[in-house]
Length: 165
Image (cartoon, rainbow, N blue to C red; front, top):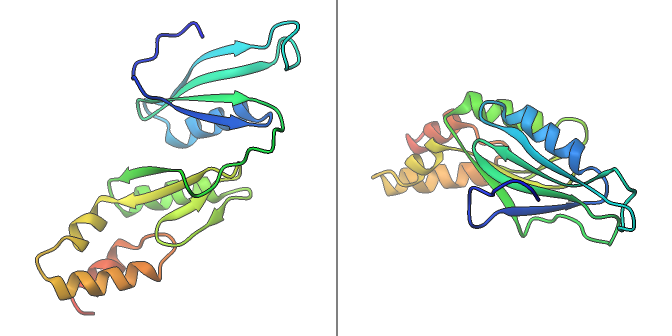
């Protein structure tokens, strides 16, 4: 790669042949300070078709990732690794949830989802931690039980449970 990585540890994502498509999708979802930083193409004699994208470096909210078109080696994403997104509130949760589950993504329990490429995400409002860590331990327990029944986190539903409603 020709780009200087800005962090010591970078998440590396293996795609069969959708690395560029996926990176462009993620950049469009997160916007702001998200962008494609660099592309490396397969050269003659390599495992990929010469001139096609081998790797991409991209940033989401300032965090760098590397995506590889590595071919079908039987590798797939699973829930053992997920990307957790700290959201400002319900509006951001709703927007990201909708974008990431669109076109074949799958909702999971308790803030988890898989996008159309099979990558697992946790879309978490900051308020979740505030409510579950609140001073009313019984309220926090009710909120936790409410969360366990949710897919996309509903901040107002958590607050209502915390308050006993």
